[in-house]
Image 1 (cartoon, rainbow, N blue to C red):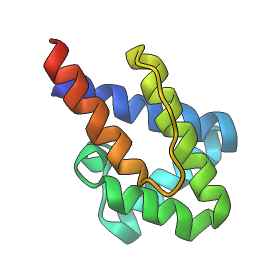
Image 2 (image 1 turned 180 degrees about the horizontal axis):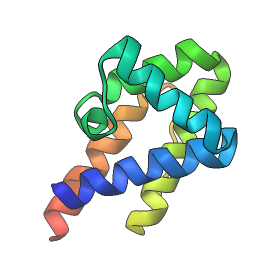
Image 3 (image 1 turned 90 degrees about the vertical axis):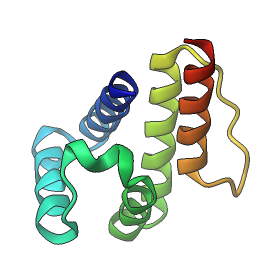
Length: 104
């Protein structure tokens, strides 16, 4: 699972950096650690909090950012993704984790 966790963290980093830039990404990680008590390495274990906090900070834009993270994660894993309205983003991540575990 360490490989999956690294893939997820990279997907979060790359997506946030692409959308917000390097300085904002660094500030976001500091915010997570200082105010939510989440480090980068804990993100795979705190997915609901990650996606909820993105929504809290960026409003509807947080959902779009979260979808971008999920899209990038699936792309990196080379697994097709079909987004379904009203499905929780963390469910996609857990599903991908299960798919990859079954195929390895």
